[in-house]
Length: 207
Image (cartoon, rainbow, N blue to C red; front, side, top):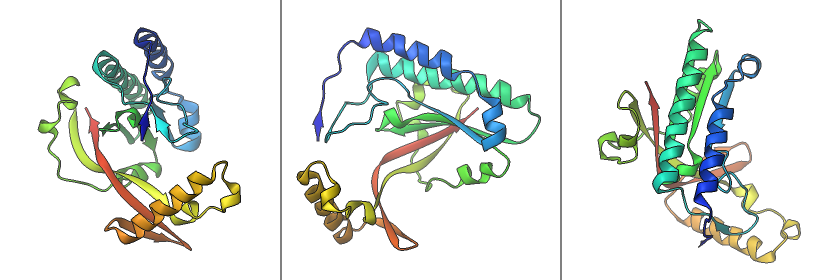
């Protein structure tokens, strides 16, 4: 994996401030219609889709701290709005470690609550061992889950003439062989198979 250098961190901080302001407003109407709403880290370059095999390193230092504070700010504002609905709701912060840029705030109502309660596989990681969580309000209570990257067999066997680069087709087929030979968790779904590669931890927290 090739990592691309990130420049202009002070400019990123301005983008983070704009993201916090924008995402702190809960779209209640959308929530009522679709039963869920979420806020991921919509800050360049971490929200961008890479068209190559390269990627940006995860946020760190002051940038990471500002994003963490933003997630908590979004959580607090949404909690105030959800309380006004006078009905049960799901509201959690999902902190990914080490894939921090995937972190988000998620809320749901009605039958969608049960979906989010069962979306991850639980683990026995100890929150006290995470320096990341120590930077957030101690009022949070955390549960630990496995961060797993899913790969569908059908997608790794995509027709070779559909790829822009033939090298990517060969890389996908090489990965599939690795998944089939390795001891990875997998599930059968209809006529497909999903393989799960462990990537780290997910801390799910609420106040």
